[in-house]
Length: 229
Image 1 (cartoon, one colour):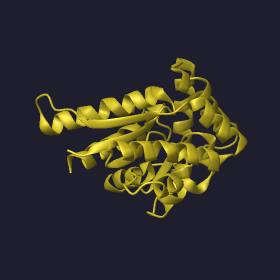
Image 2 (cartoon, helix red, strand yellow; image 1 turned 180 degrees about the vertical axis):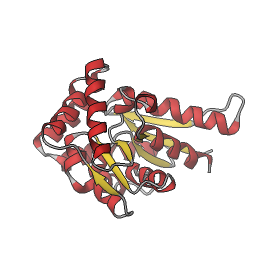
Image 3 (cartoon, helix red, strand yellow; image 1 turned 90 degrees about the vertical axis):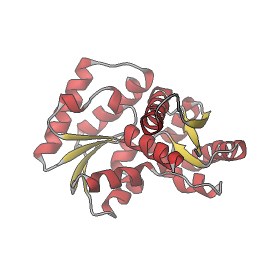
């Protein structure tokens, strides 16, 4: 079994989900008392968020690159950035190490393609929803991407940073997310990408008739499959 190198803490709430899903996937595949070989380098999200807010992406990328180097030196066989937004600096992180980086958008695109989804809604931070670093990897695979409009972008983003990253789960916020998902379905979305790794803590498939694609689960399972070979 290969060793997974996790860059976590962005936020740690969803890093917990990664660890759980990776180990559940390995146990299901191998049975018995098997669990995953993982290394975790968890950063201080306060520092990362400050870089995001000020547009200092290169500095945040170097911080994550240092984390990747630490994991590689410790024996990791791959790098997994446990967040969607910070894949904006995935190229910088990959350039820092010789082991592969498993990209969350590529894993998501594969899953959407396998499910026959050609038009997908994307929910995430304002950076993920409005910038091209993530959406371009989907559109390059022939997937049309729809994002919320107007004030709904701010609503989705606010709930992520002010609530989900702090472990706050609100029924009112869940209602807002489901309303936004419904509006995107009305615009033609065949499925919705939960493009922030915390969103799956708030809404799940049982809450809506639209197919949901939880990127934390997709990414974690892809990492486990890599480890299993």
